[in-house]
Structure formats: C-alpha cells, structure tokens
Figure 1: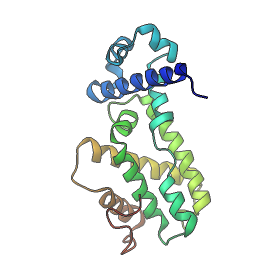
Figure 2: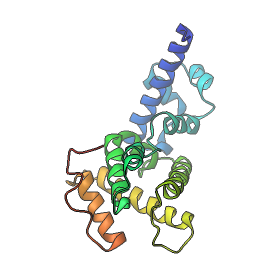
Figure 3: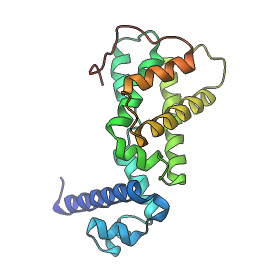
Figure 4: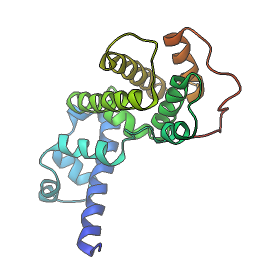
Length: 200
C-alpha cells in the first residue's frame, strides 16, 4: 500500500529530476552545482542528499525512471509478425521514442550531458540492441559479432538524433529513419508501410 511518505518521497524525487533536466538543458551538466538543483526544486540541500549521493546519481535516476531503453513498439509489432527489412522499423521506433522524450534524451545524451552518464546510457542501449538482435534476428546478413553491430548502430542513431533534436532540424522521425536506413543498408526502406501517424 502506498503511504503518504511514499507519495512525498516520489514527489520530491520528481521535483529534483525536473530541476536537473531544466538545468542541464539550459547550462550543461558540468556547470551545475547541487545547491542550484535544490533551489530550483524548492527543497533543502539536506533533502537532496537524503535522496541522492551526488548529482550524477540524480541524473542516472532519470535514465532509470524516464529514459526509453526498451523498444516496446517494435516488440509489440514483431511479436505478431516479423516484417521484411525489420531494421527499418527499429529505426522508426527509436527516432520516435527520442523525439517524444526529447528533453530527457538530450539531458542524457546531448552535448550538454554528463559524459559519464552518457557513456553508461549508451552501453545500456547497446545491450538492449544486442537483445533485440537476438530476439528479432536483426542484421542477419552481417558476418560480425553482435556487439560490434550494436555499437555501430547505437552510435550512429544517437549522434544523428542529437544533431536532429538539438538543432531542431525540420525532419520527421520517419524521414530520419529513411535516411539512416538508406545509408546503412544501401537500399530503399519498405514501401507502403507505417506512414506518419501509424504505429508508435
């Protein structure tokens, strides 16, 4: 049963996370000090340390609570039928997730993020990519270790998404997916599927 203490704790945690997101996006992780986070969250410095040992722990809690690691939309679609050129749908889902969670994505993996947290988040995405490759048999035509493929795909997808979202480039998630797919696979994406506004 959820108690008032639990609700108060969760509310304070959320306030601290909101403050961290706003500050990272405005000033960059390295420029932020704990007192600024506490002030923006309207809590005391002691309250901050009751919840988190340091600001990196706070930022990582955002990864755990708010960052879309699992490619749920892909899993739902692929569970019913495995489409041709499945890698394309993986890209569509990823770009849509990153766009939907733009503030969190940029605070975690953008140019103003913590390099340590970005590196950890990148590795988690790589591990998830390897898992998806095994489950959905992605990149079967490549004769190389799965971790190498995952590092390449995650690295390109993340850096491309950072460029796209930080600079507010006028492309849709699907257009970004088409560009990445054409570049990596040297072929056109499947025609007549997943138009804009389709499955997410």
